[in-house]
Amino acid sequence: MVISSHTRRQLKLVVPGGAIAYHFGTLQEFWKIIQSDAGLARSIALAALASGFTTIALFIFVLLTPWLRGVEPDFRVWRESGILSSVIPLLTTSIVLGWLLLVVSLAQYSNSGIFRGVVGASAVYALSFGLLGLLPAPKVKRN
Image (cartoon, rainbow, N blue to C red; front, side, top):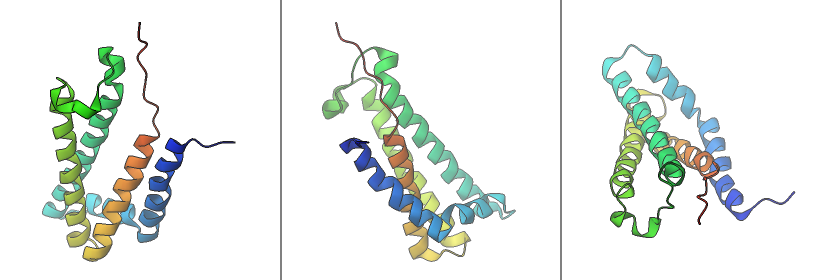
């Protein structure tokens, strides 16, 4: 079985991200914060979760844009594209905000500490982006 270079690149994110997140128990620590009764800790963790879901939804929207609009977007000139010029900044904001909120919730409100919080959050994001990158992008048939 031959693995494409794209799949190999994505697996370089999935495997280490998953291994580090598992080793540090990042998702278990995060889930404990979500289930806790601590007001601010839980609020920050829920905001991180909402931002993560927003990131995933926007990424899938960008993937489906060719199918929804019938036109292949040119990502090199995304600022000139009607749809991408508004979605890409939102996607970037949700990525940065979600990662920061995840780091804060892990570093402040779990036993992870700052180093494990930063590395664990980065691992979760690497795993997520690797998995999202494995989703097949629909192609538009050109006439």
